[in-house]
Amino acid sequence: MIKIVLAALLIDLLIGDPVYPFHPIRLMGKLISFEEKKFLKEDMSDYEKFVAGSAVVVFNLIFSYLITYFIIKIIPAGIFRTLFKIYVVYSCISLKELSKCARKVREKLEVSIVDARHELSMIVGRDTENLTEKQIVMATVETVAENASDGVFSPLIFAFLFGPAGAIMMKMANTMDSMIGYDDSKYLYFGKTAALTDDVINFIPARLTAIFFILAGAVLDLNTQNGVEVTIRDSKKHASLNAGFPESAMAGLLGVKLLGPSTYHGVLSDKPFIGNDLREINRDDIFLANRVMYVATALLTAAMSILLYSPLYVAL
Image (cartoon, rainbow, N blue to C red; front, side, top):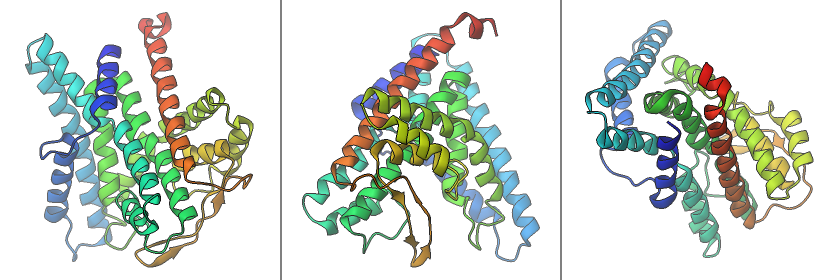
């Protein structure tokens, strides 16, 4: 499995994650949209919405795992089965795409703040129309940190430990959370199990992301002491069970503040700041956040490879 994951990661680094109709994640999205239209009705009670949403989650997790597992099994052993496994894992990783999206925001800041706001709106859920340059940079760095966990670390860990089917199941959980795991009036009960499932699945990967961010900070000669202190102090300030860990680690390494009040669809969310304001955040911190993510990914990949080759793991 190590060679499969390494090949998938290399392909992602070379060509990124192109958009096409039959991308596995897009197919997941279509399935979830169909299920929402079919099973979520306005006249349902809160309990009925919860049961329907929970059934959708259980079905999708089992279905995504089993269909991937059985497709692999029916492909004759050899090059085609190997290529399919690589394709599946590659489809779950978004390292280059995430860094590219962040880099585009940085490039647009050189053109105009209006263009940068629009570019940022493609990758965040908050309102961007009135953000200052500092707020744009903060939001971009936060996005790199948070999505490094969901889009890079978690699928890599699941692929290493549970194979392509495990990686697909993880992405199904993440996709359900991103589509229906909200606490608004529409999805509060229907998406509750989706949100909880994503929290559970990403609980360990999010914390490992923070740890490897700090290790990457040591390689890049960043403020690792501040990174550790901020992670311990601020990681639980975040409303999300998991997102606070990689974001706090990134804020600490860079010596800046992240989060703070933001508006979503015109409604103010009074988020607390995380990090220490040791210096003013600037455009180039977007590049620096990307470098932290890349080095951390390399360190994780090396660590997982060593672990899987270790006599103890082989014995288990």
